[in-house]
Length: 186
Image (cartoon, rainbow, N blue to C red; front, side, top):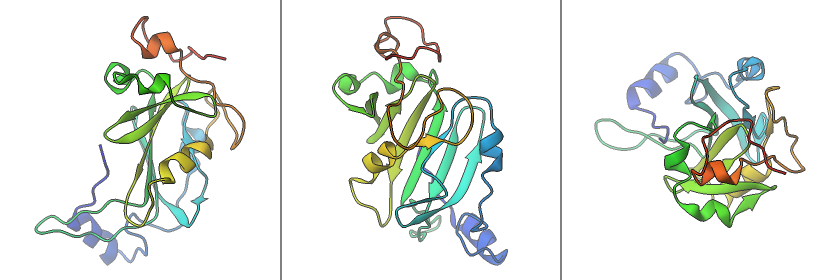
């Protein structure tokens, strides 16, 4: 699911005096740091030329949005921000997300990478990380973002901006055994 910004939300934010389409340019990521439902990964307060402009934490999906976009279109204008990172628990719809076996041949920092909705999905031992690119970005942005991922909370596996990322167990990705978020591989 890609983030779309209807004109009514953009107008509300604009009339509220916000300088960013998504709210206050000083985004408070403390809720993400304290979240303990599943591991959350991001690329920091700023990635390349884009600032973090929005964080949305939900029980089954957390979204980090970097950079603004200009709504266009008819009655309900929308836009796609330059970079959007969506993190969900590993087992959320895993049978659908891992259905295409491309993850058997692709990896980043040791973790398998699949594809869903034309976006790369990294399978860690505790979460799925999907990266979308939008306005003003290039085709290589999702890969660079996945390569730069790091933990924002303390839910294992906790990773730094370099080094390996514990990947999901291939037998779970293949549907050969039930999904369990603790199924890390070496």
